[in-house]
Image (cartoon, rainbow, N blue to C red; front, side):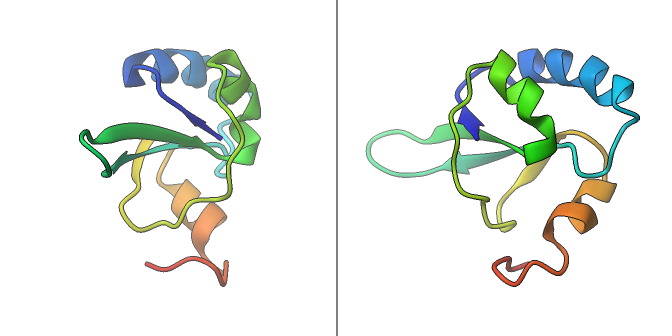
Length: 92
């Protein structure tokens, strides 16, 4: 899922949901700057475990993004291994 909403707002919504879920490794929000057209666009990607957060910010569904160029916005560092390692469609 993706959304075009300020990152601080996403973090504020994410953190209590993340903590109440027991801080699962597979719950994360990533960002990427997408270039194209006249302007660069900031896009947030929500892991499937972060669906509640995605709904709260009215994010729409999308395919799993490639890891390349992603930055972790919310979650913890364990998410990289949990979500991307062993996935044959991902490139480091």
